[in-house]
Image (cartoon, rainbow, N blue to C red; front, side):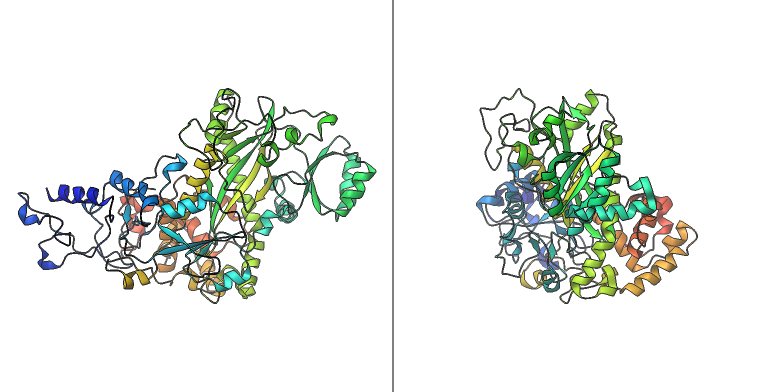
Length: 632
C-alpha cells in the first residue's frame, strides 16, 4: 500500500537525509507526497491513495487538520534517526501541540548513552536538514557539562561562541542585568537575575524568617539560625540558654561543604575569635536525622522553575540520596569528622569507604568511567529516589507522605523569595515600578529565564523534612552511571519543557512549511497597572463559573500555554499551580493576575475542562480544540 511504501522510504532515508516536514503537494500532483521520483506514484499501486488533508500548514493561527500519523515516521524509525545523530548532520525535532492550530516546539530526545528509557515521541516531527541552524551558547565561565552539550546535540542544536548573540538558549553561571537587556524575546537563559536570594544562605534565611513572622509554624521549613557576625549577641544568648544544642556553621556563599563546621554551644575562645570575623550562618543542627543502616543521608531534590509570574514549579521524579561514609554518632569527639556529619559528595568521594553506584548495569559508562574493582556487594554511597522508596517500603515508612511534605517545603521556599526576585528583575531591566511586567529593550520578559535548583533536604527521625540549602548552580557532572542517567534525562526534560519555538526566519529560509512563532500579544505586553485592574475584576467574580466566563484571549493564552507546558513535562511533576493552589495564595505577597488565572483554572477542573462534555459550556467557541492527550 502507498503508506507502506512511504514507511519503507523513511527507513531507507535514515542513513541519508532523514524524513522531514514538506510543503503539501500541489492539487495536480495526484496526492503524491514524494519528490524527485523516488517514491512510486499512487497511480501505480493497486490500492487507491487516501486524499491528502485540506492543509498541512502548521503556522500559528492557521486553521489546520492534525498531521495524519501516516505522514510521520513510526517511533522506532524516528529512533533510528536519533541514534545516527553523532555520525551525521544534526537534525532537530519538533513536538506537535496538544491543541489544534498552535505552533509546535523543539523536543529533546534522551541520549542512548544515558541509559534512560526513551521518552514518548509519538507527537515528534523531524525537521528537514536544510532548515536554518538552531544554536545555543554554553558559557566558558561555567563547567562544560556533557549532559548539556550531549542533549543539545541530540536535539539538533549547534554551539556558538560566548561572544555570539545568535543563540536561542544560553547556559551560563549567572545572569546579569546586561545580559537581560541585550536578550531578545525569543531567547532563554538558565538563571534568574535574583537567584542570589536562594543561593546565599543568609539571604534565604532572611526571606524564610520574614514569612515565619506572620505565618508562624507553617513556615517552619528550615532549622532556626542566626546570621553572623551581625546576630552574634543573640546567638550566644541562645547558646547560654540551651547549652546542649548543637550548631552547624556555614559560610554564606560557599558550596560543596567548604568551610562547614559542627559546633557545640560551648565554643573555644579561638573559635569565637574566628567566627566573629567571618560572614556565615549558624543554624541548629538536626541531631536526630533519619538513618540508613546507621549512616546519615540527605536528598538532592531537583526543582525547575519556568516562571515566577505565573509561578510554575516542577519537581523531578528522580534525584540523589547522598550518604555519609562513616556511621553516625552524636559523641562530642566525633563533631570534627566531616565524612560522618556531612553528606556532600565532594566531601565523601575521597573516603576509602565510598562505594560508587553503577545504577544496576555495566553497559552504561559515566563520563569519568566506571571502576571495575569495586565491592559490588557493598552498599552504594549514592542512591536514586527509586532505591530510597524501596528502602522506605522495607522499613514500612511513609514515602509518599514524606515527599508530599518535601514538595510543600519547595513551594513555600519559592513563594518566600518571589518578592525579592520580582524587585531584582524590574531593577535589572530599568523599570522598577513594573515588577514582573517589566520588559527589556530587546524584548526580554518574565518568561525569558528559567532555573534548575538543587534543593538539599534532610529528613529527621519523625519523617519531617528540613531545607538545608538551595544550590542555584547544581552540578551536572556525571561521575557515575546513576548521575549520568538522572542528570542527562533531567536536562532533556527541562529543555523540552521550555517550549523553544522555531524563529520566524525558518518560514523565509526553508522550502518546507514550518511554524511561525505566535505574535507576542498576550500577558507579556500588558503593563503592571493593567494587570492589577484585571486582577481586581477577576477577584470580584462570585463563582468559578463567573470567573471562567470572564476570561478573555489573554487569560486563555495563559491557560493554553500552561496546559501545553505540562504536556511535555517528561519526568517532572508540576507541584504549583495545582488544584491546591488556593492553599498557598494567602502566602503570596499579592496574588498576581497570572497566578489568579491559573488558580481559577485548576480549581474549575484544570485539564478536565478540555476533556469532558460537561465542561464544554465553560469554553469559548473560538478556543483551539484539544487534539491529543499524550504527554512526552
